[in-house]
Length: 336
Image (tube, rainbow, N blue to C red):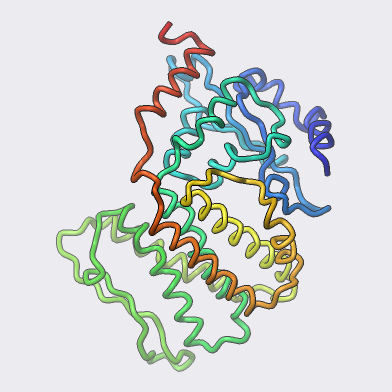
């Protein structure tokens, strides 16, 4: 499906909300493709995903109402309010940053202020990308390994995969809740007393004066990894093969994109150079062993880029705030 076809589709009644919703219409700063079309990995059956940024109304900014994002699930359209969008960009959220890096040809709406955001995309990039791109990708890839290998790997090896997935979350848990050391919460594999298991994951906890709710949430997050693996383990392998290949393709794409961000090459949503390679993954050209080896290699490249990145520890919040004020001033006259 070409871009003109998408533009024609947006003019149908199905997308009437783009013109009639009071927070959209002429308030939209950026409207662009997302998902497979934005990455260049779409096939004939791919859905049309639309993402964008809109400026809040004066009532949202100064009055009693508030607005963060508009979502239409039927058309898979998500449009963020400017404040919410910038907040997510400052946290290096991959799914939101990619709005700033789509091809110019994929822009369905772009205003002067929307272009100002895209021209200043580098302001949002920092070492936060190490965690936002890397932790998400590696955790999901380990889950993918678990799913793909469930029929051939012995129980003990599957248990090791689950442990690696949980350990991959540890830095996130330490940042989200009250921090703890590896000695205070220690996970490891040991022999199991259960007849159906050779080994299993054990935990040693040695915490003092630790918030109960934080501990509950930490346990819940760890438990969800085990539950998600269990769900994957009961799916039909043949039926899910295309889905898993697509999942692998997007996760490798995420590692490639994150590596470029850390190398100072900006946000490049459309994967021109790797397009055919990613499509081959989607089509199932590679064996699972080959896929795992590629994952390891792209993780290695990502870690190398993370160790040598020249990105700042955090974004320049003052310059980002000045950019926001310029946009609000241009449109609503604030500060004049």
